[in-house]
Image (cartoon, rainbow, N blue to C red; front, side, top):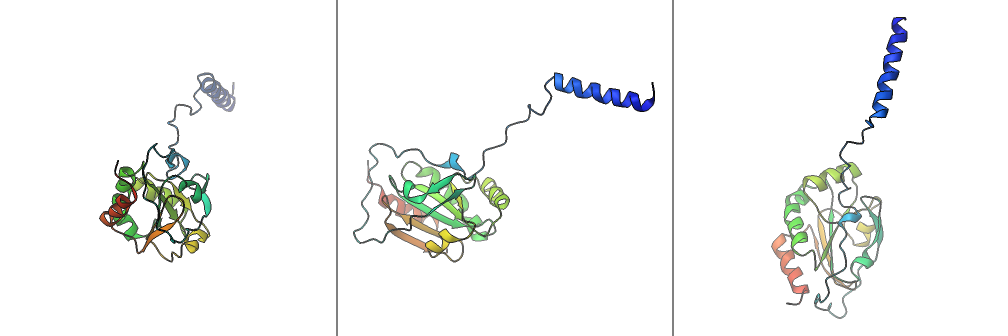
Length: 195
């Protein structure tokens, strides 16, 4: 038996043994879900959720559609059909966005049954957005606005910016330059009627 033949025979035997034992990488941990994707969308609003009506004459918010970070389609009007929505316009490279993210994520957790926070990111690479979402533990859905159409619809020119939309789609408030957590928390508390 020549040396080359023995090496080939050993390689074939190893491949057969791996196949027979099921060693095909199946023991690897499953990939984590894509941060900001459909898994972060809320379920139905709780029964009996009391919300203050929007002021009469409030302008309507642009009812845009987009794709979440995992490619799932989302229509903002579907989200504000049963509760208020807070749009958080940010980018992974915005230092002020990063500085305020922990407080926004906490507000999203605290008000998750009453209000939906939705991130909207543009001018960013998807892998940078994923890194940002994981690093800052963002638990709410995020729309990738690749061409900036959603940003333009809301007249956002630079990050951060925050917009509050009432149940039903009335545009309530916006903060170019972002907003601190206590101010946003107070605004959200005004929307919900005491139980």
